[in-house]
Image (cartoon, rainbow, N blue to C red; front, side, top):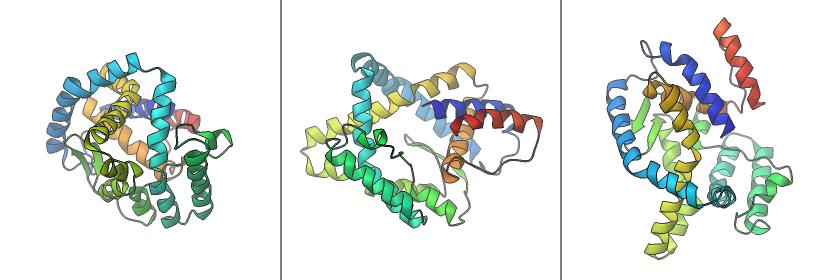
Length: 246
């Protein structure tokens, strides 16, 4: 969450200058309408549910839920480690998955991190970027939110490589529905600090989210070390905050 907040702050710095000419967002008029729809749906449903969930479930319990669903997503990370040629990292992430699935009791506890095995986040959108595929247009999907042309196949691939997808298939409908609801409510609760910052500080909430999402993707694609922009006073100021990630 700390990384998200810092990226959000950097996005806020760019809000005033990122709207006029943006090759990354040629679909902006349509995207803004979809974003407005998503915001209305979120305010009416997910945000109240997330606030109630946070009030009832202590942080330790929410961390356990996050651990379980993160562990189920490890196969997606491992496969994309290999596709990107990160074989050592792939071995480390495979070890993480085994440890957390066994000693960590099906991922309830992140014992791998305590043993020094850092969690990585790799997906097929990042893999395509490593292979040289251009980012394409920014897209806001109904209910799903920010995405891009390059990242869309990764969203689909991530669904089929997520262990939760197959858990839902084999469980009876009431349990599958409850588990799905728990996952999305927990995910929504985890980004509440970002949403509050957007609401309280952003001059243009749409640009704030777009630039925060874009910078987050670049951060992941370059493993925390995106290429330095052309030198300027604003860039030097942003670099001081980016160093917080190291």
